[in-house]
Amino acid sequence: CKINTYDIVPLEKNINIITERLFENPKFSKDIEFEQVLIGELNKFNDKYFPIPEFKYKVKQKLIDENKYGREKENMFLPVYKDLLIKYKIELLKQNPKTFIDKWYFKNITNEINFIFEEIKKVKNSNNKNISALILSRTMRSCRATTHSDLATLAEPVSKIYYCSKHGKICKPVFSIMKWWKTYSKDTIKRIKEFEKLKTGTYQYCLSGDARTIDIISALSKKQKSFADILNRQKISGIFSSPPYVGLIDYHEQHAYAYDLFGFKRKDELEIGPLFKGQGKESQKSYIEDISDVLNNCKKYLKENYNVFLVANDKYNLYHEIAKKAGMRIENTFKRPVLNRTEKDKGAYSEIIFHLKEK
Ligand SMILES: C[S@@+](CC[C@H](N)C(=O)[O-])C[C@H]1O[C@@H](n2cnc3c(N)ncnc32)[C@H](O)[C@@H]1O
Image (cartoon, rainbow, N blue to C red):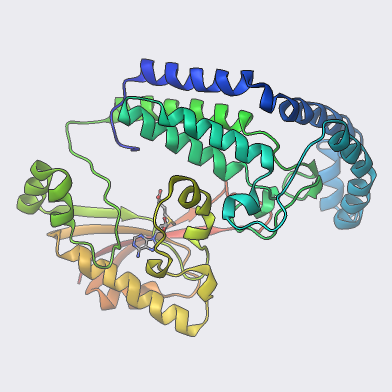
């Protein structure tokens, strides 16, 4: 989907029609209006109690107890929020949710998502249909009922305003997908246009499968025979990859909304280094096995003098062992600070890019 070629004009037209239909649907108007009024009230409140940059400066200088002050102001704003909920008859989370979507999305958001998904199904051009679904899935990721700092690792659903340490003010969950649908539509089209300019006459294909075992040539043969033949003949010069790290993220869980909506089959058991298995010694051991299995599998398709670049936050120093097990050596390491993390409040974070070559 990401690497396809698109006819931009009809794609933009299609997306604009969907956006208009969402906007004009009276079923969604009260929640959109509610959110606008809430944003207005929050802006006034935040200007008064969380002035920029004074507030963050005072927190840094320890002149303000951030948690205590944040909680106080949260409680001060809550009645305004509750009154607006009643005035606009806003319904929030479902009781006894059975699916991920029921648990993590407000009722209006679920209705908007379903509405857009039905509109997308009507799109005739299959490429345009797929990229519109991708825009919807990016939108959904930003519309879960959670705080800004828990976007990457969901804790519990949040249905009220809260003090947000990431932004240093009172923030709110999302009540309508409109803003994010528009944002990601624009951003996705911008990326497609940029990528179109960079494309060369080469082939690209995105295969999904377990990297430890996938037979790249035969999987690709089923999709694009001519490309598979070239690959078989010339082999692969190198890999640039950002693998999962040990015990950091449950990827299936993080994208559970997409499995729910699009009906994809989950394969949790194939995930390398999932968060639910932790970062203990046993998990580290299986991580070393798994990543070296991936590299050994890839080697079947690599040229003799290959280059492999892996980005990792190797805090347990596992990559020396991984390289050894894969019959590789670490040629070089490059440090890469990660500045724009989803979770801004979780401290400095940097990654290493390992350059690996045959031993
Ligand atoms: C750090 S993320 C990199 C995401 C990547 N840069 C992208 O844009 O999709 C690591 C990815 O590895 C995937 N992964 C985990 N176990 C895998 C396996 N056994 N085979 C293939 N991919 C796996 C995760 O689902 C996740 O998407």
